[in-house]
Image (cartoon, rainbow, N blue to C red; front, side, top):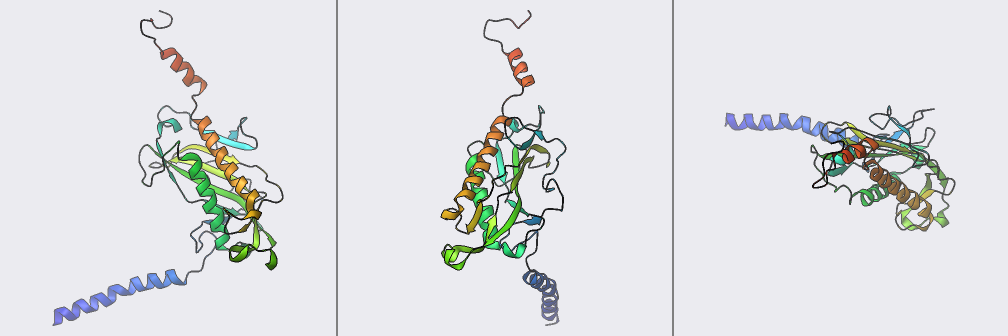
Length: 262
């Protein structure tokens, strides 16, 4: 009997920390950096040129192939993008503009924003890098953030897109994209890019039904365009560099031909 009572007391004592953890988790309200929908939300620092999202900005340079874009591609025989065969696509993060009123950027709108862009990215890269869930020595981790999201104008009740319409439009006219691929095991940056295309007025998200809302067409085109530019950048990153091409040419030995210079 004493043994049974001791077990019951231990069960009660051990359950207290669990209940405290559960109650703390339930009472926590969504803030910048964590939302009910699970979309990471951060704010741009005043006057900041970059969001601070990338693991490193040190090697970024203007890319002549892509307007308003800074890029980095690691040139290393052992660690370069051509060595990897799969990718983990992490959830898209959102950085709001410095003065954005977060209360006018509801969870459901931000979720629609992030979900559409992540789907566009997945479609764009999946045939080049099969998407996997587990890290590995030949697996990349793709990290992406939308930078400078802002609250747009209030949407009149008679102009809302039904129950899925937002109270305020989400303005992406000045949004940029920061993206990088890192080694899924070591975290080493393999490729990175900052795309600062200015979309101009009219690029707004008016409904959580982003994929079918007529008023959000410009936003969909922007997301699809960014995803395609990412794919184009990755394709260019996988091209052999001039030294690689030279080494490949030097090592080419057609059957029956002596090495060059022999």
